[in-house]
Image (cartoon, rainbow, N blue to C red; front, side, top):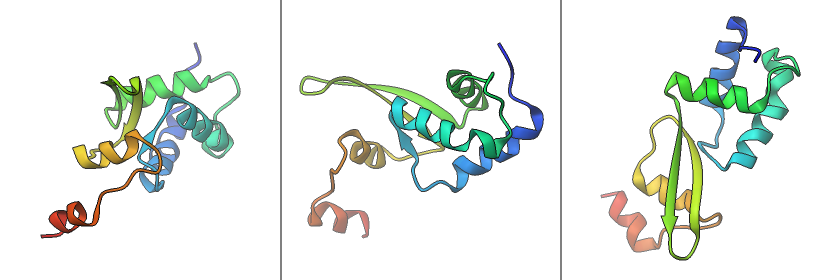
Length: 107
């Protein structure tokens, strides 16, 4: 399995560090990798799953499984450290905190 070229490492990390999105489903993560692979200098021989494995190895990309009665098991990939509240918002697209909850956070 082809590895990640050393010269691509900084470009990949910078792309994730500067991206507004910090929580990904597997599909969104693969799309992000596909759309940036040329900028990172990755050949088509390097699979998206190989890139994900590599990023998990850096410790900055985390895979977390969530289980609920309503949604079943859902796997989210997070970049960097996120609070439980940020994860909660990402669990269901389009979700938001009520005004009272948001005011509580800004105390």
